[in-house]
Structures are given as C-alpha cells and as structure tokens.
Image 1 (cartoon, one colour):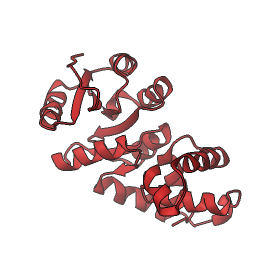
Image 2 (cartoon, rainbow, N blue to C red; image 1 turned 90 degrees about the vertical axis):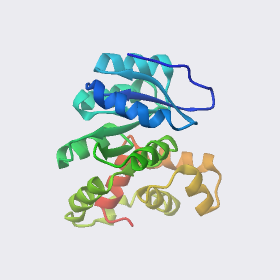
Image 3 (cartoon, rainbow, N blue to C red; image 1 turned 180 degrees about the vertical axis):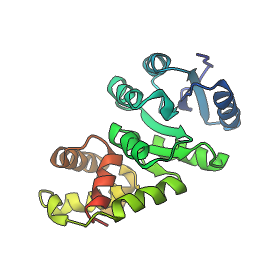
Image 4 (tube, one colour; image 1 turned 120 degrees about the vertical axis):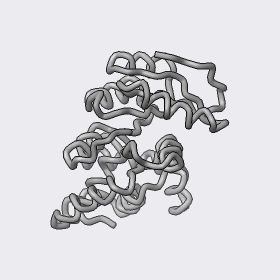
Length: 215
C-alpha cells in the first residue's frame, strides 16, 4: 500500500484494486489533476479498510472484485467516505448488489479518463453517478417493473420532491437550491426518507424511486 503527501484542501482518493497496473494507470491520470490526490493504494479487502481508517479519503475507487463486503465495511468504518465502483463487470446482479451495499457510483474501466474524473468528483459531492452503459442497464431493469406509487405513500409531499431530485442524481446543495430550502433541511428529509423506505444510501433510494415510478 503506497501513500503520498496530501494537501489538506485536496480531494483525497484511495485506489483499491488487486491489479497494480490498473492502480498505476489510474494514479497517473489523477496525479495530473492539481486538486485531486491519491492518498493511498490498496490491493485487498484488509488493505482497503486499513487505508480508509488511516487516511479518511473522500472517495474510494474500488474494483468490485474485492467484494461487496468491502463496500459495506468502508461505509461502516468511515460513513462520510464515498465509494465509486470501478470495474469491468456490468452484469445486472453486480450493479444492483453494489448499489444496495451503498456504493454511490458505478463506472466501467473502459470509460474515458475525463468520465472517470467526473465520476470521482460527482461521487465526492454526494451525487449518484453511473456510467452510460450501466445507466442503460439499470434503466432496463427498473423499466420492466410496473410502477406502484402507492408504495411511496408513506412519504410526505416534500419528501417525494426530495426523492425525485435524488433520483435525478442531484447533490444535497443542488436539491436545496432547487426547492428553496436549507441543506440541513434536505439532510433531515433524506434521513426520514431512508427510514421510511428501509434503505441505507442515496443510490439505493434512487433505484427504489425509479423502480416504483417516481420521476
């Protein structure tokens, strides 16, 4: 596990992938960005958890081959850290499992460098980010489910508004601006939404919203 000095204001990233060539390639891309710093690299479940505890990164870029359990443990150990899955696997089961585990983004390794960087920044800002291929697959999955807005009947009108904007991928600050509310109020609404829907992440709430017909 390699680490480098990280400026306090930089967006801190941990690269977690079993393949050194993947990590080195991604590190090279990110090192060219002044306000993004690779705090550490990890090649296993244990390395990843230790790096998260030691460096408290903003984002972990994680190969799903390290396991869904890694996502869960990252979020348990450092709730404010975001997880961006970076993998070659776009199978439906893997996408849904990663999002249900709490990953906020999911992009494929063949994505262009600028798309990967945008995904890292978006996830760091609290946005749900899916690569184009993954988004199409997810849309296909939720599109085949008959909408049933009644399942969301326990939400208030304002909570419906907030959830709809979460499903669009907006961050809390953008939702607050759109609805004319304070960011703290949006956070409170999200806590209530998560509890009522029985979900634990924005991505999972967004999937539920789309699956049940909320647009």
